[in-house]
Length: 623
Image (cartoon, rainbow, N blue to C red):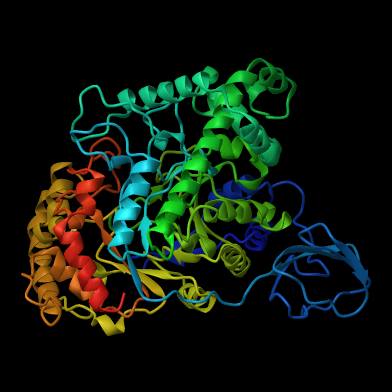
C-alpha cells in the first residue's frame, strides 16, 4: 500500500491526520498508527466502498416529512417492522430508527426531536453506591441503601440521586472493580443486591476479595432456597437470546476466568460448537446468572419507584461509561460493534505527557452506522429504563475518539483521533431520552472539539460545569453565578477531583507528591496557586453565603445555588466534610479508588445538619 493510498484510506475512514494538543503542539498520526487503526476497524483489506447514492444516515424530526431525495422507488421499514413502498417524497415518520432502501442503497432515518426540553431549576446529591455502608456496618452498599438515601434526599427537596456506573462487572475478579471498566453496559451489577453479609472485619475500606465472594455466595443460597417461578420465566422469554448469551458468559467465566481472551480459542465464539455444548452443561449456572439480572432489574425498578414517590422529579441519575472492557461480556456477545486492536484513551496532557490508554474497547463507527446505531440505542434505552437522568461519560467521544493501537507499550506508538458520527449519535440520545421523558447530561470536560458544546446546547443535552475550574481571570477570580451556562449541571468538583475540604488544603497535591506522581519541586508553586484560588473563591462566595463561614460547605453551596445552570449537584463527601476524593486519576492500587466507605450510614446522612442547611439554601434560590 503506497503512502498516498494509506493516507486516502485513513481520511475516508475518519482518521484525523493531525491535531493540536493541550500544549498547542501539532501531533501528527504516523503511518503505523493509521494502518493499525484501519486494521482495528476491519478496513485494511477490501477497498472502502464508493460514495453511495444515499447518505448512510439522515436525521429527521417526528411528524415532519423527510427532506431527502431518493434516486428512484423506495422501500421503508419502520422500527416496529411495518414496511411501506413508494416513489417521490418520503412521508413523515414516527420517533425511531427506520431503514430506507432505494436504487440498491440503504440509509438509516433517525427520527428524533430536534431539541430536548430543559428541566426546571433543581438540585440533587451525588453518592458512591458501593461505599454507602459505614465502617461499623461493613458490607457493600446495596440498592436498598440507595432507595433509602433517595427517600431521605427527596424529603429534603432534592430532585435526583446520582451514582457512578452500575454496569455488570467481573464477579470472579475482585480486582476488576472500577465502575468505568465494565463487562457489559446493558446489564447491571448483582454486587449491589441486598444481602445480610458483612465484612469479616468492618473498616474504612471495602475489601473486595473478602466481600465480593461472600455476597455472591449469599445470593446463590437465596436462589437455591427459593427457586424463581413464573415471573422469572416470563422475564427469560422477554429478554431472549441476548440474556442467554450474557448469562452463559458469566457461567463460563466461573470456569475459565474473568476475561475471554484468556479462554481456550474454541470458547471465543459464542455461536461455536464448543460453546453450544458448554451451554448444555452449564444450564444451571446460566440460569442463576440470568436470575441475578432479574433481581437487579427488579431492585432498580423498586429503587426508582421509591425515589419518585419521595417527591423527586428525576429519581436516579445514572452514569454510562465511555467504553467497555475489551474482553468482557459485551464484546464476547457483540464482537462486530467494537474495534479490536485499539483502545480508547487521551492524547498527551499535563497529567500524562505520554498520553493515556484506558484499555477500553471503542465502538467501530463503520459497524455502528451499518446497524443503524443499534448498540448505542439499546445501551441508552436500558439505562433510561431505571432513571430520570443519564450522564454520558466523555461525550467528547461522540465527536471524535482518541484511539491507541494495542500491542505496544504505552507511548511507543502514538494514537490518533477517529471521527465519529456526532449528529447521528446525538439524535440517538435525544430519541431515547424522548422515549423515557428523561434528561441527558454529556460530560464535556477537557479539550473540547470546536462546535461540540454548541451541538449539545442545540440538542438540549446538558453540559457539565465544575466551579473549581470556572476561573474568570488571573489572579483566579471566579465566574459570576449568572454567567454560568443555563443548559448544564453545575457542581463544585467531581469524583475525580478534590472534595471541597480537600481542595482548600491542597490535599490532592500532597497525595500525588507522596505517591511519586507530582515532582516535589513543583509542589510549592502548586500550593501557592491553590492558596490564591481559595482566596478568589472565598471572595466569590462573599455576597451569597448569608453568614456562613467561607470554609463551610454551606458557603460553597450558596454560590452554587445561585448559578444560572438548571441543575446543580452536591457531593456527599462535601456534606460529610471528607478530605479524600473517591478516585485519584492515574492510580490503580496506590490509592483506594472507589473503595472508601462513608463515615456514617444512610440514616445519619439523611439527617445531616449540613445537608439540611444546603437543602434550605437551594429552596431559597428557587430550586
